Image 1 (tube, rainbow, N blue to C red):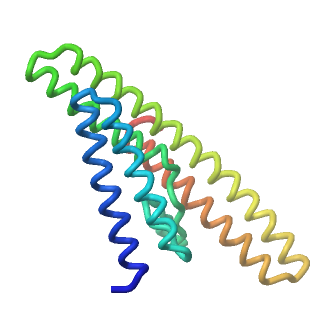
Image 2 (image 1 turned 45 degrees about the vertical axis):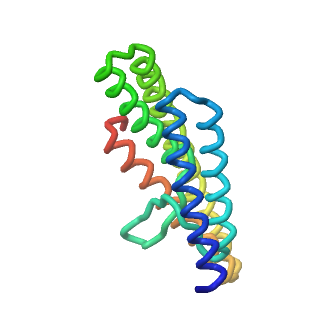
Image 3 (image 1 turned 135 degrees about the vertical axis):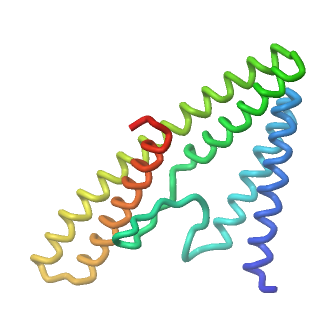
Length: 177
């Protein structure tokens, strides 16, 4: 196994153990354990990013027409995770009759929805901006005859389109669009 694969595997292990530790801390209400889990998760994400210089792994949106992909804003999957965890805490609180745990779950679910929505809006706005900038830049580069710049701007446009469409699809799926 090469060093790149070893660091990728290590990053996945750190992310998974951090996620489990974060969930345990959230369910038990131990904020220090939850914080340690978040730190381990972030360390795993950083390791993963460092091990992939050419292509970033992680949640991506894609445009089936162009094949372009764009990495999603980190608030989207994190918000979705908080919603899932909040729902689990709410259910567990209802099941065992713990009103504090149930209320904590409701609050975490609501915060997760807000966080995910912010990420969707950020991706949508960045997608629109990249599409416009890429289209205008591509036209300018084509007029000047600079094929390299034209390709760069076309890629920017396609990435923006993928980001915008991914956010639109996510919003439509969640009923917010």
